[in-house]
Length: 371
Image (cartoon, rainbow, N blue to C red; front, side, top):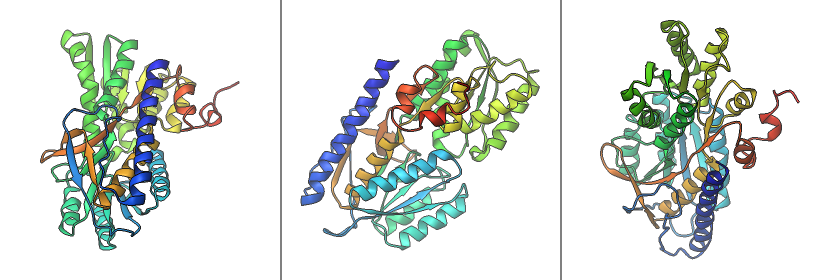
């Protein structure tokens, strides 16, 4: 586990170093050289190009960052890290968040476009309806980079995220190792979020052979509307009631929904007795791991995500050529993509991953654990 983590961490560091070295040279002389993203984990062999550009030579690039929500801890980190990365590269960013309101996000995106941003970076609330934002931006010559979540059925110019199918696979691998046979519950995220579908696909990539063999039965499988923990709680309570509390394992789409799962289990005296997987490495989630009520999470080093997206957005806004060696089909085109590697974290490697990276402090992680 430790060696695998160190290898993944090394790859992320190499990618970040390459971006910074190349950008520091090219931003000074406006060279039209390529960024070759071959150091990024999970790349395919197919290459695709995206050439952006409204910013005039010598002008400071202005990025519009349209975010779905600040209601989850994870997205506050993305906001701050992205802003820090953009400003370190000499650009500026205007950030707006819709707090899970689809119409509000569309309106905010139009506001950013009207302000004359050079490129629009979007974390979509609704993967489908956000296509309207892309069309509007393109109509005035502004390119669009999808951040972490894919925008469906739109000609987006770049997609930067993690290998989200792998996230689900890591969750299922960890839980099936502990519970190779039994009754499973899957508590999904928002069905309007493409990532939620990728997480689920990854989970069932691992579960399906065990389902086919009869070793595992999925006794409950439901989405949690808008990623709201309250909806996940209702789902888990329904799963327990339908199965007379006889459940052997739970996989939840993120740490917030995992928290609701554990709340429902605690009400039945089952917290810590049934393995539960989450993802995002939220503080509450990793605290539950060291406390013993949550089994694992999936850590996505979002500093690497934010820095990579910032570097690419600035180059695209300047009209420089960007090459991404991966493509992801969004229902309309093969989108040039950069996909970073996620890392499975449990009680055994939490110190050398999440804490060692400074994602959370040791003091915060172990705050509720008696010395």
